Image (tube, rainbow, N blue to C red):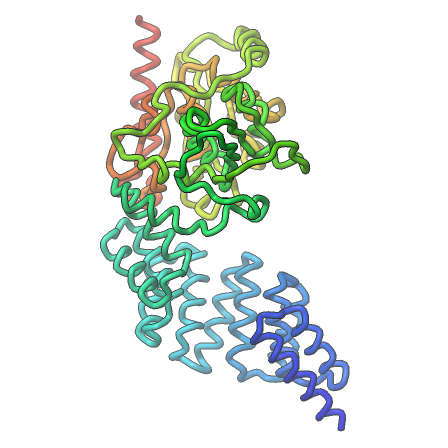
Length: 488
């Protein structure tokens, strides 16, 4: 009788899972286990439901108990691997996926997941091989086609990557990751007309916060009010806020909703446009439309030739500017150079775009250079014990207005692909950006300049991971500039 009751609860759990009701599924599997604690399938499926619910520690416990009871269950080993991969334990995850493959060597899903674990360990060559095996086993596996495209894009094999994205979208035309990958490939190659269209098609609604407002798609704004809002990272907001004045020229009322750390800076830079931040919960204004900032290049049909805002459009507030002018007078003489070596650690591509501080150590001995760290976050701690030639401002850089105040008093900014690079470029400050071998779409291909920021110079990796080569090129260029300043 008990086993029948447990089976009934298990079936209820499976029905909930098929409908995507994961909390209900987890509860039903738990009821089954209260009746029969040794019910292996209930343990395994509850573990997966908990994984989907992001309760990873409980999921791991469930799955390990399930594996002890059902050691030949492929799904148990695969699901445990997914949990471990989410926990950023890729070596352990790979071991679980390999165990699953010993039980079912032709399982496309496990091949794909093992490839993801190997990619997380920077073994892209074997990951590519496994993604290829996955799509051979299951040609309709659109996620694996996308993952294969992503690996190829990382190797700058762009034609092959585009083919994989197209294959993924042929199978699942609305698969957003593949559509985004295709769009960024087009933009990276300067194919702006089609690229913006694909990029913008991903935005069906104007965001959950403003879903009730109609999304602006280029209709007349005469007599209308529109809210422009941030949708992605700080750098994206800084890059696309240049369009706000074009919108304001056409609308009766234009306002901005941006991230809190940008609020003070943009309140000054885009005045008299009103600016709100995500920290504010109430809005007194009523709007006819809402539009995410990254949609504006598509609406304004941006090409390489007509990018707006080529002149500086971001400025530090005057009191902040003056405060840092006085601070800079206390620093050593020489070419004042700000430096950032790491971006946001939560960015999906941070491992590819951030640089170890130790890789730049030869810069800090160049005569005639006064170094100022603009680094924030955990990476700022890397300065301890590494160099005593960097002026550390991190404790005072509480928002981007302060960072802009420092930048305005520098001669040059050297940075990885980061929001600080966008900020310096938007201010018209000379900025040298270190670009990985597989660049973000906005830096295009091969160019040493940026059509988005005329004051920017790009230093590109010539092969994957070649930060030493980039550092050497920048050192040479910096020595020349410091020497010219000293002799000029």
